[in-house]
Length: 67
Image (cartoon, rainbow, N blue to C red):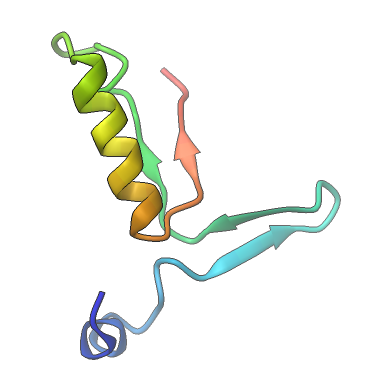
């Protein structure tokens, strides 16, 4: 994300926040994975891997895998 976009949004979606008791750090923006799990239609393994890789490359560290 470009700096001017971050300023316009007022927050950095890749900023990490820590859960104190667990010691886990996650990004403020996450990726919901319901569609990857096939809830709406089948998703290929290649598409799923590409989605996770792109999200990780963008700085996301929170992946919501709940159905």
